[in-house]
Amino acid sequence: MRFGTASELWRYPVSSLTGERLETANLDDTGIAGDRQWGLFDADSAAVAAPESERRWRAVPGLRSRIGADGPEITQNGTTWHPVPSPPADKAASDHLGFPVRFRPFGEADAAPRYDRGHLHILTTASLARLQALLPTAIIDTKRFRPNILVQTDDNDIDFVEQGLIGKALRIGGATVEITEPCTRCAFTALGQPGIPFDKDVLHTIAKHGGGGFGVLAKVVGPGRISRGDAVTVD
Image (tube, rainbow, N blue to C red; front, side, top):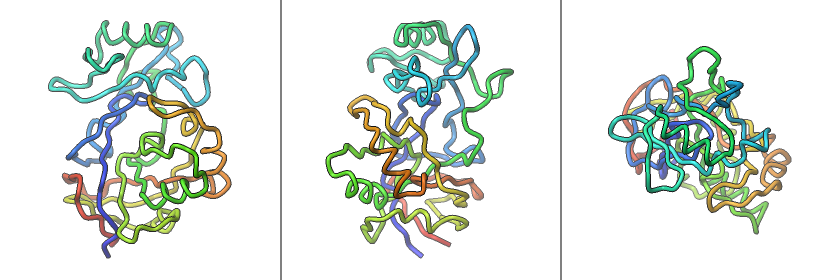
């Protein structure tokens, strides 16, 4: 059954940093290839960046990450990109935050991933529309919620329609994913990001009307290539 269209694809090479919008992506058993494989860590304590819970990390989304020709890169100003890992990348991030930090790949000793849940986050325009209806003056921007795939639903619903997909399989382009659980939200959703103001009402409204979840998590059961504009169908 046709459900919608993949209208946006996003990858976040470094967790907590702003990511990059894609036209095409490969899905493998980690989700979108190259997504959230790196973290930003306190250089002294090895604590991972936690903007949702520690004020000193709140500026992290002001840094951007992408996959360049030779691997992950980050930028502070949008002009100069630094390879990750490298001393210039660490310095740019340290200058941005005001204390020493460094980039490390998840999986190293003392470098556990921030999340141990589904590797793929899917959100629909129906849920965005529902939240906008509940908060008419709020800025409900895709970037606030950091999905990997935004699905434009065919019926133009205004509802949290993803909740009905738990346990079902979706076909997107050449890949198949299984929806495993709602995406539980934390304070990161309320944080300010470039062009998006702090708004505590966003998280409170999700908790009140969405059962704490907004979007869904999924695992890849059939690897393949997906593209913006691909049909999304429910098996």
